[in-house]
Image 1 (cartoon, rainbow, N blue to C red):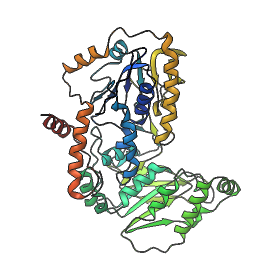
Image 2 (image 1 turned 90 degrees about the vertical axis):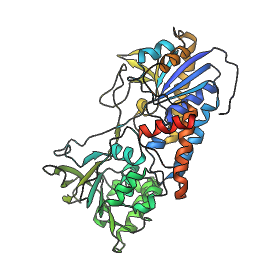
Image 3 (image 1 turned 120 degrees about the vertical axis):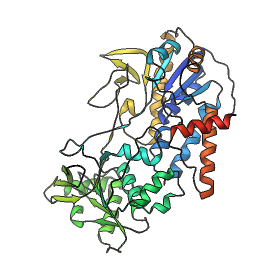
Image 4 (image 1 turned 180 degrees about the vertical axis):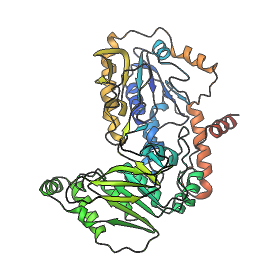
Length: 448
């Protein structure tokens, strides 16, 4: 670790809950301010980086290089990492408020929005976040058992998460062996008999939230045909206006038209893109067997798709945090400029940033200005914010005596090195270790 010692003018302390982009951008902001003598980051799982590690698709390694920027805050000696320490399980909010002047939540969103249709709870119907957590190796994710046999999957959604899911399911599993995907997941995908993936969008191609590179990538997959019905691409005046005013919409429509004019190559797998339809009901007795789609405008026709797997990719949703107010309708912690408020009253010294503050919007970099705004609120409040009764060092000593396995930043580097070694024989990316017991064993052995 690079150690950077700088004088602190006020000697304040802060705890950041969540080591994803939002929390780590905030860490850098607070340390650069010279107002804090110590900032501790608590993360419920062993590894940092949140959705960069456990949300970015394994076949997009370039996106994950942002971790070098996010890790910069730990170059300072006054930044400490508490991996595998969950607030609400291993340490309580009241303890944090007792030992730190400032407590900031940046835990993001792990839940999925629901469709609210009959049959949605059948086995074989899951949220995208659950599937993504599985194929990226999140240690807390339930292990997904793909239906057997699995011939057809339906993905509901019109954003990049839906594209990621469709692409990962449809692509040749052999091409995933050089990625960070855990080997049991690669093996499960390789054993699948899947032939068709249907992506269903409620609105039209001009309104789709796909970004152009991710959409074009579908057409570059080996041994996969992309199937588009030209009837779904008919534009009305409002659609045409959107195409003329937004480059992304114009590109989406252009690419889809190109695909609609292609003749099928006879590839063993197909991705079907359906627009202007929404799910009406899920069929099945003991498990999913199909889904009915109803049109959302007159030019579309009803469809009934056979499927053994249904994936909701219609948006993430936050979960309540014990001790904090929660806006159940929006799925966020209510705040004003990052200051947590309960019934209009500020919860003194408690803040929120990232998706938990604003909802699941933007890209990874969107968290940087968000963190800057919250940091400005914190720094502006310090003059009248009372100091905590305790000190972080006292809490750290207390945690060391509890039945838990805290990982330090040095421990993370040990795990990182082990994952790199796993990937080296395959000539590819580090392979994520998705089993907590293995993580702890690796770290303990490397520390000897």
